[in-house]
Image 1 (cartoon, rainbow, N blue to C red):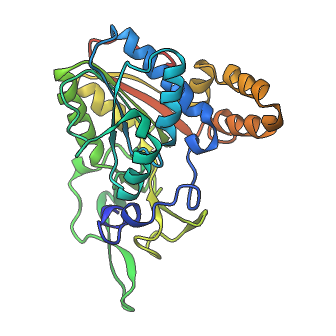
Image 2: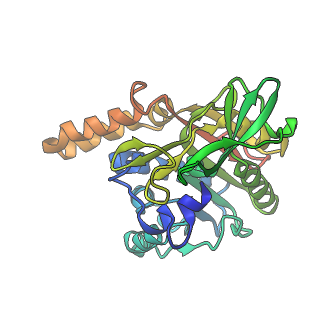
Length: 325
């Protein structure tokens, strides 16, 4: 999964990231998404005592749409000088787009997620956790075996099972015959724990996933807006898995972080003022009223993205609970 997504010569994100073609994300659906998150970040920075300097960080920022919307809202609220901007982007294609989209804000590009520095920060990541590589385990009797990728008799990629049973502690509490497990969630919590030991901060993650028990077999691939076989077009399709928010919450709590959520995206955005912002946009752009309403509805409607997507915030242990939870 990591090779298919991030190989520098042939990986999907390195060569042909397909926002708007293979998939679409919330910031591309409605500007309200990024604007509300910008105001959330500004409020939380103020709640931290308005420290200066402070960093506003986005991980996996795509075209830069969300951060551009965030900064526009922050500036409109009079907080334009509050932050230095930092982006962490694995895709050179997207990094180039972010450079152009955010030129007015002079962002720094972090060499790695673990280079947050020692200044207070607010970090956001939308649809980033789901592309962290996963391991899969399949139950055979009372034992678990890791699912692996190899070649079949025709020389084509195929799934198989490792001959040796997996250690019992390598499989999270499973309610399915097959489970996905993302080792990078452990690394993420370790990085945040070390960063919060140096400076106060919050990290907000928005993604699709489960809140009770490890996800089952959720590995999926998307190409040109349709779901395809994950092994059919390696490097040419986007690979994704559901995020185990329950496990992320347990790991963060065990590391001493303050955990808020997960909560559903719809109620979270509505609590931040999605309805009021939508009505203001409609009044200012009556000829686009239908499109504005459709976009916001897609974000908050439980039948669309409102309940499928979850929001979790991991904070330094001495900070109060953030708004929206």
